[in-house]
Amino acid sequence: MSTLNLTSVNPSIFMLVGIPGLEQFHIWIGLPFFVIYVVALVGNGILLYLITMDHNLHEPMFFFLSMLASADLILCTTCMPKTLGIFWLKSQKITFPGCLTQLFFLHFSFFLDSAILLGMAFDRYMAICSPLRYRSVLTPRTIVKIMVGIVGRSFIVILPVVFLVKRLPFCRTRIIPHTYCEHIGVARLACTDISINIWYGFAVPVMTIISDLILIGISYSLILHAVFHLPSRDARQKALSTCGSHISVILIFYTPAMFSVLTHRFGHNISLTFHIMFANLYVAIPPALNPIIYGVKTKQIRDKIILLFFPKGMQ
Image 1 (cartoon, rainbow, N blue to C red):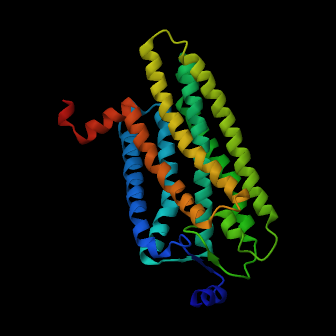
Image 2: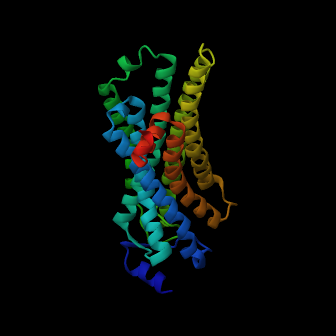
Image 3: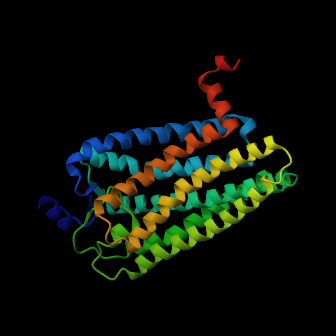
């Protein structure tokens, strides 16, 4: 009751509940999330360090990989510190500007990831299907333009969401049954019609994901066709190994993303506890797994990691 009174008196404060129904287990649930978050920070940090410091990794593929690592750090750092604060310190309060900021960077990093994966698919298409034109097309200047386009598209798509939420009047409860602020979860607390929020929050992600997935699918169809026509078995295995890591990351990203978007719109029979737990796993696990996948599957990265931690063993 005190929480309800606080949220009614102070309209600038929201309360994040955590995972509804599992409040008594928050301390224990926080332990695996903390481990996953540390793995994400360390893994992506090592990737960025290696790509920045080693001139042999200053190639288009690794520039895209560094962007993916940066986006993953934004994604997990936007949510995990606050989530752990709720689990361990009962730090449930969040200001409305803080909520909008978290909401923006959460969705911004999501669209950023999707666009980067599309860029990586184009990079692999050029490297395998048009190797003679690879360096002439993907010049440093072109890479910078692609990066600006990726960031610009994500920013333009997500900025309206901030204003769609900011315009809403909140005259009822300000208790959010979640561990972080996300668009529809916050909009549903409003005491007005939120049809625009619902349809923008559903249509834009779906159209963006589908268009990116179609282009990625076309790229990898052409890549696989080219790979199986390579004369050398070693060349085929190398190309398939590189593509395998990309496809693994694509599946890890898009499968839960599509599930999350669709359950927001149509999953009325899915329990809130399951939905919130899944949403937390989605922002934590892909950023932790991506550097592991690339570290294991990409020979250049794997060799550099071994050299970094076991310099004497490589001599």
